[in-house]
Image: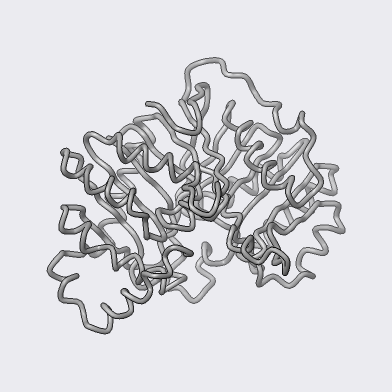
Length: 375
């Protein structure tokens, strides 16, 4: 399949990590085994128990002489006490905030770093939906730890992950050496085919590379589409593509949040779009136990799009994102199995239910829908 922004490379391996219970130990173990470098970029790195675990691991690595670089989004990680990072910097790690507010360029503050990347020695990479915060541990106001999916990778694709980190880091920190950006294991053939999409905003109205890729995948679907997205609010082109997929015999099922969303006006804005989708045969489910934060798209049981991007305006237009398209039936099968299990704890929204929702809900959703262009 042709992708508008990347090409597939083979020789890779990928391991799905279910929730923080699997992701955090794997990530911390990789940091502990680092021999040369640790590059971490994340929208959300908020002080607490999870933050402390990673800070200690990064400090130990830095004290061993490892090149440790940490890039946090200035908005997504804004609640940190600056003193929480001083010990990390004192240990020798390089820390930078992405896109702090600038009075002379206020509109740039809307363009956020939403990538979730950890690259160790340019050999092992991690990406997906998981940030570093107690939401993922269950030590928060949510009834359960956030439901999420992360991935561990090795092979040539890790070089693209390093490039994805460097393209954001170089804007706010001392640029990485070109060797560090490009050195990577060469493909030996075989393995899993993966295409990397390093996505930056392309202007006030242009859809981002990850948005173009999501749209292309949906338009190419022939048999089935399953979508898990923490935040839902697509543009007209994506919504139309989803409806057209159903009309040509590719059923679409969408899983998103119920009441446990971090941004309720975003949740309401997405609900405003349910009517058209339900009428055209798209099945919509809302996850009930807690916040679902995974970002997963599976096409025809063989192609998976994973990474940091949601199916909303922020990811389609405003954010820096990093996603991977994986051509591997085993992974697609695993993700669809996880999807079916998540559906067991979800409520399906029917058209009649949506049409007869309370007047107050209709009003909130109509008002909120105007904000989806920003959020």
